[in-house]
Image 1 (cartoon, rainbow, N blue to C red):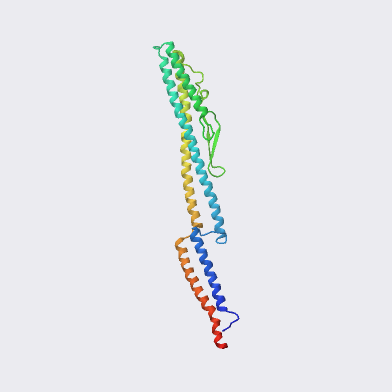
Image 2 (spheres, rainbow, N blue to C red):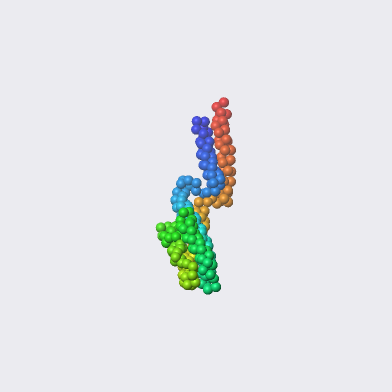
Length: 269
């Protein structure tokens, strides 16, 4: 029906143009953001799944950093124990030197002075070595490295590497007899130190293995999150091209529909 009051064709063309334009705007938004889901209206269930995954990924990534910090802490302590090891070896060497009868009392006194300085250096290292203010060489406190859920953690117990902890606080090599006795004491101290150093070593290995596992978990979860949330560029570009053509056609048809009522003027003349 040819009418001039209601332009049904124009209304229809405008409605389709609006739909095409909205679809085109959505394609542009997705391609510019790189995400298929930009708001809850795009995919409410998918949005909920994505946000849960993102939370899990963030926790795992932080857990990875926690484990790496734990490794750094243990490396700091283990490095300090390497210096303690050198001091104990030097002390044992001095004890062996002082145990022989070919040195005078004055010479043994010099050896004993160095021996005492080495023991004091062990004490200083054990009490001053720290990581973020945490000390693990002068106490047996437990440090918990957390890297996931409630039960995902590794406990690391400190070791007493002080003179008292190693049993060398009152050892002397001022005489051949005391030097000979010191050799056995130093053997025990070195064994204690080796046990503690090995403990830190296998804790480092365990934490490094944990980091590897967490990295794999993070990668897999990120892949899953990408499947849920990221836009398929090829598919979306095809949709965008279709919507562009439809929008252009809608504009052209709306222009034609707006001129149609003018046909009625020829009948009114």
